[in-house]
Picture 1 (spheres, helix red, strand yellow):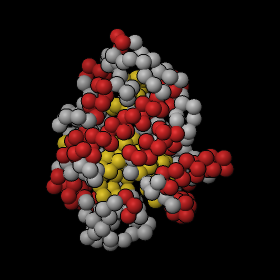
Picture 2 (spheres, one colour):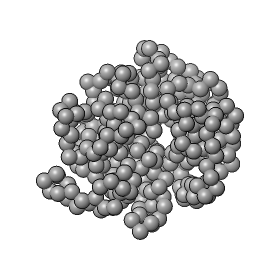
Picture 3 (spheres, rainbow, N blue to C red):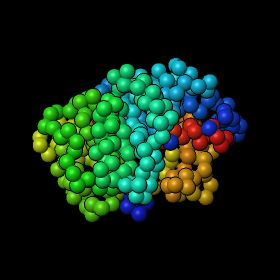
Picture 4 (cartoon, rainbow, N blue to C red):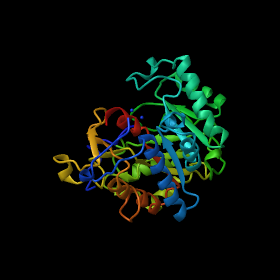
Length: 328
C-alpha cells in the first residue's frame, strides 16, 4: 500500500526462521508467519479490551491464509478470528502498472489460489475488500468480478491521492455500522492535493462511500474527534465507517515516532529500507520496541487512532514476514 510522501508530511512528527543475538535485543523467534499473526492477535486483544467494537482490517495478509509447514492451521484460524476484514490489492489484475489500462488479468493458477485463500475468511463471515490498480472499463470489470465472488471491490490509481470522479458502486443512503453492511469503499492516504485541512475534510465529507480509509494525520496534526465525526456521515445523511491507516510491518521516517538519529544509526528492530517507498524501512515486528510504538500508551500510534474517534484501523504491510523469511 502506498506511503504518504514526506514532502506533504512536514512532521514533528506484501521468505527461513529469524535468529538474533541477545545483544541485539531479540531472543530466538518463531517462524515469521507466526510472529505476524501474534502481533495481530495482540493488537486485537488490546483494542477490544478498550473498545469492543473497534474494527481491524488487514492488508497483505492473504499469504498467511495458506497452511504450510511454517504456517499451521491454527495460525490461519487465529488470524481469521482477530481480523474483521481482509483487504487485498491486485486481486484480479497483476501489479502496479503506471498505466492501469495496460494491467493484465492474473493467470489461472494465481486466480484459483487467491479464490481458495479468500474463501476462508468469507466462510467465517469476514468481509473481503479488493482493490485493483486499473483504469477505464477495467474498473467496472474488477468491481463486477469482486461482487460475483462475494467481495467488495474497486479499481483505481496507485497514488491513492484523489477521490474518483465517479459515483460509488452500489451507492446507498443506509446506515453502515458493521463491515458486512459496506457495499463500497474509498482509500485516500495521500491528501497532498488538498491545500488546506478544511478542503480535505470537506471533500471527503461530500462523498457517499460506506467505508473511508484515510491517514490519521493531515500535515503534522492528527485528525480531531470533531473532524472524524464529520467524516463518519455520508453526504446523503447515512452513517458510515471510518478507519485509519497503520503500518504494522514497516516504519517510516515521516511518522511521529521517528527519531532523527535513526537515519544514521538504525535501532536493532529496523531492517533494510524499502526501495519502492523511500523513507520506509522493514520493521522487525516481533520486537517489543516496535510494539511499544504501535500500541500501549497515549503516545502510541494505535492509541492515537482510538483517541481520535476512528471506528477501526487498517493494518498495512502484514506481508512483511515474506521479507524476513527470504532475507534473515
